[in-house]
Image 1: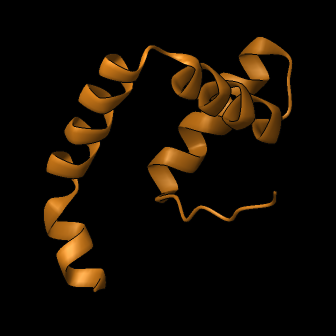
Image 2: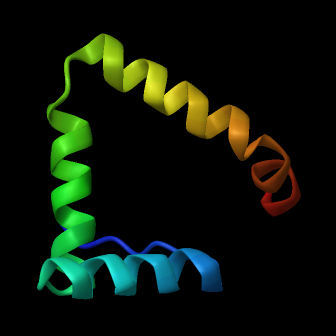
Length: 64
């Protein structure tokens, strides 16, 4: 599956810098983060998902 994610300039720069520090490509880091998050126990994933949705509620409303 291939997906596209829109990042802010700050988020993209953070991803690039972190990936460079770890010696991997940004795409590899993003995939590893998703794999880790999705591999967490269901309850932890649910809490993390709810946090992201709450944090970005206004953004999602504007994009709708």
